[in-house]
Length: 369
Image 1 (cartoon, rainbow, N blue to C red):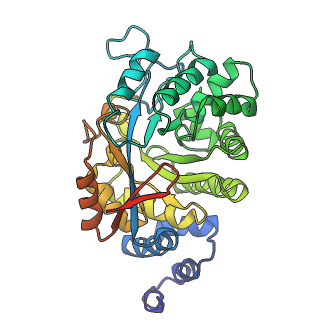
Image 2 (image 1 turned 30 degrees about the vertical axis):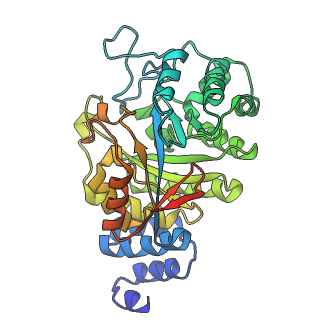
Image 3 (image 1 turned 45 degrees about the vertical axis):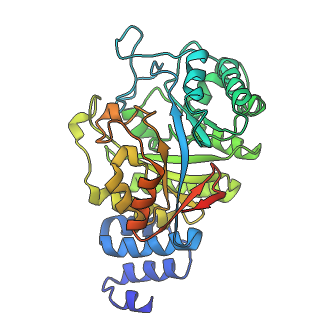
């Protein structure tokens, strides 16, 4: 690795690279320098070093499917292409029975996880959603239930008149296993006023995840990037996540989510390039030195881009999904019917030079392919 730093002419970048190679934590101002000054090959090398510390040459995936119970939502975020009002022909609101019918279509398939997330429905509280979890658990006890973003949790818990801890314990007793990372968007409060003013605060998002970790519910974390934020906002977001992970060690995975422009009120911004995607993956991997996993969510950026991201610190390709999510297809993702067979995921991982590993929802190895 000395040869790497010998070729870096910028003294600041050289010192940062040496810190990363030595396993030392970089500071927020050094993260900014990486975003602004480092070239893509250097970022890929450094992110690869950090990735290998956690997972070696392995890249993970799982057999999963999504359920999106409703796209009716009390919020109307400017970046959202998913929310529809009552009466809109493109809106939906599945009953418990309809959702169970979706679960039953996977009875003969080797899925290990159901991911449940959708709009914040105005009428439903924690017991409505908890009873749904219980019904899924009764039907397929082995299925890991990862459900409800912090934004959904805030609404349903508040509607039931519970504290955050009380509400999360209720859901855990119903059968909730883990929490996805959605709703974080960007933590800077001024930006949130511009893009999602009605939504729960960043402080509350962090508190919900901290409380979940405290009572034994692991979670993921996200960022929404490529809109009106700048690099300082991204570093601030990463820093807050890193501090909470230092405190709880409850995050499994970080998932950068790219702003997609179709069918929303921020379409005028366009979308950032694949180069910017890779830069963001790499700096995130370098900065989040206490997160064991980083995911490239292929239904958002496409299969080939996700494959490329494996060379920029990513160690997780998400899962098979089986055409069960519409959140990003409604926002213009090229993956309009997102589904991948096991063989295709394994091929993409191998072609990138890594070993495909099937995992469960908390990253226990099920099988090396």
